[in-house]
Amino acid sequence: MNSRIMKYTAALAAAGLLIVAAVRGQSPASSSASAPSSSLGKVGVINIRGAIGNTSEGKQASAELQSQFAPRQTELENLNKQINDLRQRLAACEGKCSQDEIGRLTQQGQKATQRFDRLNNELQEDLNSAQGEVIDRIGRKMVDVLDRYARENGYTMVLDSSAQNTPILYASTQIDVTQDIVRLYDSAYPVKGGAAPAQKPAAKPAAPATTPTKP
Image 1 (cartoon, rainbow, N blue to C red):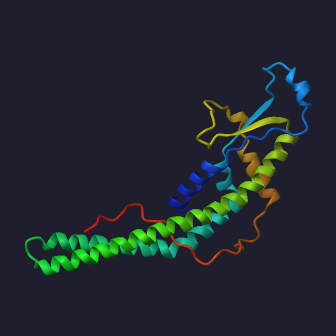
Image 2: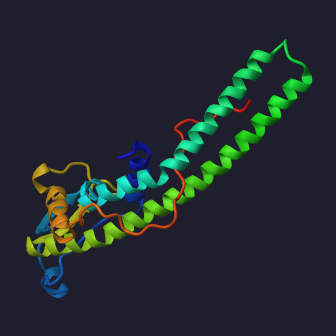
Image 3: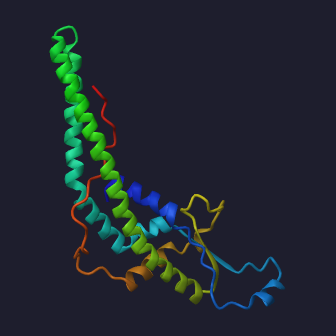
């Protein structure tokens, strides 16, 4: 999976998928209210963003996004090289080229940088939208799998350890249900022979890691 895509996917998952699954069908509130506060019940922990990325569907979606955005990624990388080349030419021109030549190179660099910024912004918007759709699709189904798993195994609560606002200071690996949920998800929603689901027309690639230096 492309490291940039993984990074955006992780960010989206952390922002949008805090899971706290209370088991349905427990004793009525009136009776539970009288229970000692220490009887919290069975608690589990899941890393949602890790679970999403490790499902077969998540891995397939990651590969599809990488392929889908690759042409625009390449376009941005080539444009970045052009900008850096213009910067080097300007540096080499110092004290040697005419003001007209310096002005021409500067104008070319400014136009190329503006185009880079515009394409990069469009790319990020399209990438975030496409990844958001993937995470929403997988996340909704994963919540159902998690809810069923929690009810069948007597959990009263499952917390998402990957969410920044989850107050988990320590969690034993024995209560981590991430791998169980990934396994159950893959069983419930098997990937069909590598066939890619229908996507919108080609989107735009992940932006280069560095922003070009303006000439």
